[in-house]
Length: 502
Image 1: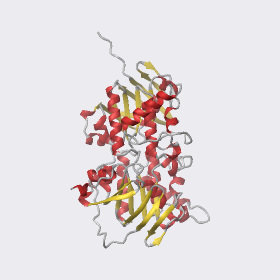
Image 2: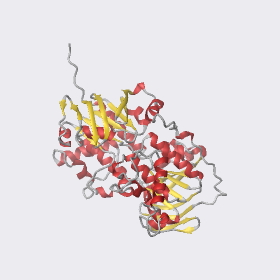
Image 3: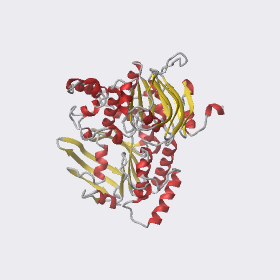
């Protein structure tokens, strides 16, 4: 009888605890050569802990991991790297003062010329526009994500783990990445793909594993699942919540008779120019565009983080151009940033202090009003279904998605007239997205103007009452009602006006 060949990756009865918190509770999983396993689950399900254990970052309390039949000793990540495992993390970890190329090739054996040529080959295959000599500190969050992916590709890993690789990528970049993933599959590379975008599971996976509370609750070939089956598996048994944001009602505003909350006139800054735009009360304004289009630069300039070069911003008729960020917040504009680690959170302090840090002036006098802080914090913990042991839990101990919920809650805690949400569901699972979408719609009913910047076109289409697109630093299209389609928005993001082509 022929002996069965060992799986490329075999995880056997893995347990991992952090103090009294049991994160992994007996994980068993085999992934063979050329398989693409999509690993899905809610925030706090244990996905990141599992892949970090495979990578040798965490040492399990019990259990074993085998790479092509060889047991890991969990001595260090270097051991996993040597055996051909590479983890592309969700949050990029680059050396800011090094160039893009230096960040990619660091730690990889080989001549500089060979590595340079291989890097150029991958960039050409992917169709990505990257300048190798750029300093990493000048890269956007999406560009940093591309660097991390290139690191994994250049190492020619036998097992490639991708943690939310498309969370900041545009459609074209996603399609290019999927092509590379399929090519790697054809070469026999084993891929573990962590994603919160369930449509991606069916596009590229051969298998799917669903995690909940530290265990794998369902595993099988992707053709044996439907979208609804995965959604049902992600839901908490007692949640009873719908995850279909397509059912959310949209507003039909009479823009000619409605006074805008915010008016932007001939606005210019670093990365954008000649912006003329009105944002109206009780609407969700979606903004789409490719990386480098200027969306985030526009938002941060309005928010007082970057210098205004020309033009004017009015909030309810009052000139707020060029104000400092704290004064912009007081006037009624708040901003939830794209990169929560750089601009959004204080990882070493507790949840309550993070969530209320933007509204302390409103709820405190000479001393901090602890009762008001606690009330506001609990409101968003409850409404956002934040998984937290208490308000005093250190924010850095929360999962990424739960950290993002706290950042969004902080933006809403100041009761803004206009809130700009920059990639608000980046890194958030299906259940958490539903919570965020529900909060957005409830907020809209109060008359708050919501400016949604998102690379998820389905999200923009589903949520927005009106959509504008940016292309090369300028607004180039606006869509209402039936014109808000994926095709129109995608084309406009690349400088093509489908309406004019009809």
